[in-house]
Length: 201
Image 1 (cartoon, rainbow, N blue to C red):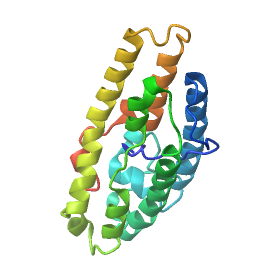
Image 2 (tube, rainbow, N blue to C red):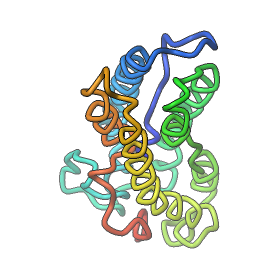
Image 3 (cartoon, rainbow, N blue to C red):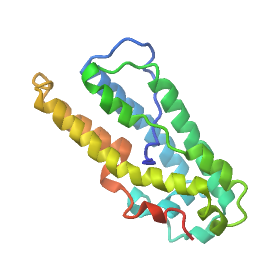
């Protein structure tokens, strides 16, 4: 949520003790499965489809031929309120988890705040897509989506550095698993071609 970043809910990972690397990856699997389930239910609902129409079919869901003009900024507000709840739950629970030291930087990249709630609030007051498109809140959101490209590059770079130190010698499967989780959580393989076009009428 980017956005997909957003799209993460942490559950069943209480406590502040550092997890083993294997347990950490297992926990992430469960977290993202739960988050995706909630997000899929949202974007396949009639109102939630505004998220796909506005951001692009790169997210992998069928728009059913709908256009942005089939929705209103209020529809976007309602959808983003739920997305913001998903993000808030993820960040709150992530703060209670101490990842393995070697994966701390990767963990921080997974769980970063995007300006979703701010855009949701502004969408609720916009009279048109044109008005919303020109707001500072929308500009910040588009910039955050664009920054996801760098986040994905940083993630892979840090993962490569960790692997080069031989950290995964006893778990050679883990870099692939972590990379898959990045694609899942950060949508690195499915970023919009031009984030600056998001929700642009």
